[in-house]
Length: 274
Image (cartoon, rainbow, N blue to C red; front, side, top):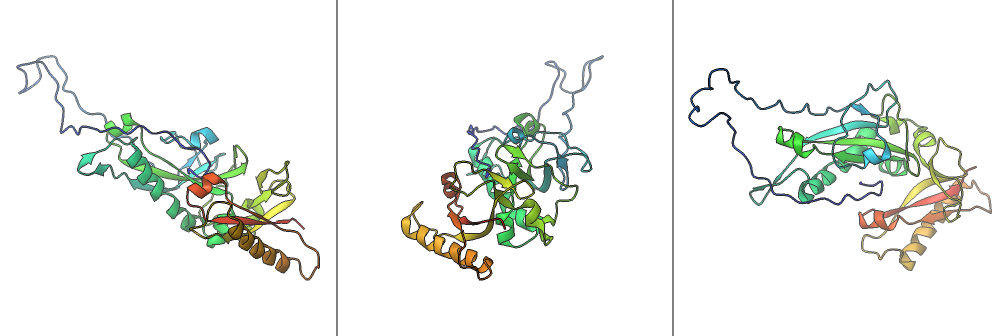
């Protein structure tokens, strides 16, 4: 993500690995002085678990570090952890900080590919849904205490700037025949209308994204020839859905520039809701 549209500005830091620490006054290395307490390192933070639920705001979902507490999945929540992995923090023999751009990029590459299998449904259904991946690493303090994990969460977008309250069970949610009626991408007006707002299909709407149209990987953004080809393909989709009607309406929508720069090479085919 972040597919949600936020881009974190990350500071690259090089960490010096410490083999161990000891405490005590000079001359007392063999054992602590009388009355002194031997120090011990704090326990490593508890790693996240798959299936954990979280009540996150949109800002928290876009934060690169773990927002922290879990909530019972029977309680209102907006995010579910679908994958947990171990951070790869070595580069050219050097240990990088968990907030380095390299480590962040590795986490960003690891999380999205695991989401479709968790949600279920085919590729088109996943693309048409309002579900998105977000990811988190530990804070520097947690990393210093031994945390070496990253966490991948799934969130849903209810509308612009607002997360969807998720059901108790999210795994396999797109396998249901009516999944896109509840979690698909819809609009309050035609995509080119000034009043258009993208909403989840369980909200009031008048247009629906019914298919995705692949675009050439080497195309220029908003290229006229690619637009014409995609628009023709969308017209065919609308024609099939028109059930023989001579008049029908459709609209092809390119991905946003940010999505294009993030290598999204498909757009949406929209039709008015019947």
